[in-house]
Image (cartoon, rainbow, N blue to C red; front, side, top):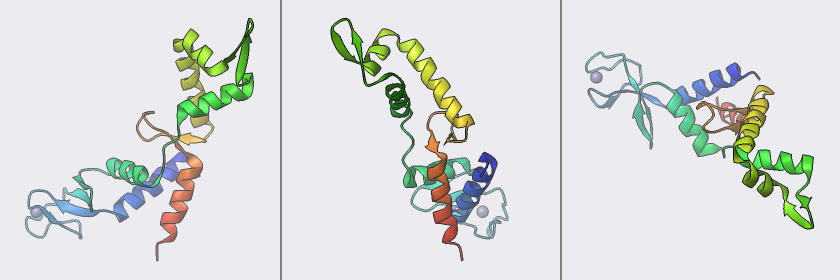
Length: 153
Ligand SMILES: [Zn+2]
């Protein structure tokens, strides 16, 4: 599944789970046109959550409700430990590799972390819908899509 397919399917779910809503009349308009004022520039109402224009916010809420975002710090730390070991000897001390690296050069650490996460995104392992504020595992998203789209008649 490409990112485009994923976004298309999430958009579809976002529309399925919401109802067109006329904010002017403050009423639902399930047909897509408000019966009171004939307005067809409608918000989407997500029951229990609120109403707003567009669908990106719905995707965001549905994912937040159903999935746990990937912990990118933990993913990166795990990779470092796998590569360099959990502990590193400095002189006669055996120190935690991750803590030493972070403490000694936090800037390089953050740069390497974002490069690594970008790489995972390019490889199609991780996906973001908010320009990198949060990431999800693509496999989690695919499971979610399978689950939700299966409920369809
Ligand atoms: Zn209206």
